[in-house]
Image (cartoon, rainbow, N blue to C red):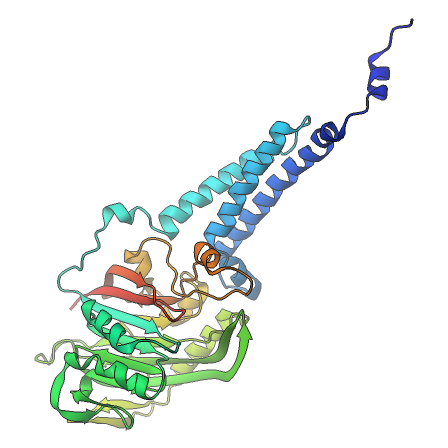
Length: 408
């Protein structure tokens, strides 16, 4: 019987489905899963670099780190398993590249995005001599205003800024929770709709903005811009309307030579489909073209003023709902040279808004997304020593609390 050659043996051999998969399918899976992981991290890195410089890049920037990096690690493990089971090489050079990218992005996120080392290097106590500012975009109904008023009082906030609180009796009830800032035996009018047993210099209500403060205010001003038309995106009613309000605080009424503490209180358009760079340009344009009208505290009541040619005073703090994540390039249009308070003193996965995504369980949304859109930007003479985010129920926005050290 003639001897069979190796070529004849190979021709006669017919591998089963498992053998066929190990030779034909698994090498491709190993290669393309590694390639997909590299592309995902490349897109995520591009988003971190470009932020919202372009309309398309803002959506790359909004990709949560835990989603992009977590998916890259899963693809890396999947590629490695496929390569181990395959009878041919696949992704041999791509896997080391993906590993280095995933490791670098993970370290970057832990250290520079989430500031995890601060859990060791920073305490959670309030530093002496600081001012505590609290901001909350309520934007919800059914809130227990007395309970939240007590909770805010327990936090010992000095300045409370609340946006979009429900109108009418609910807002009156909320205001009453802060009468302890400046109690008065007489009933005093805060504006034409709301009154308190307190000194009105410590309270201001304008449109959707409400301020209560331990320190008296001397004057305020507001600009509004955009369209009031609303649309539904991801079960969320979004608006193209925005506003910026400034408030001037007298931190030491007994002194005449001290510098006022200026806060810009903002609520910018919430439509996620709009280019945030354009939204912030509108806000900047509205501020620059302010007509000089506002309110000044008189002897007993707030009085309207008109200073033609006046401009918004430079702020020590810009705080509110910017509707764009921390670190976005568009923030430079409002706060060029300002530093995010979280970057100075925050730590952990910072999420101030919880979206409702149709068909996705809430626990999965909480685990994966982290839009930090309620922000605090501090100026040159202001330093954040502590930053905290407090989840709320009901309501999709969290409370942000920042402790500030102010240079005299």
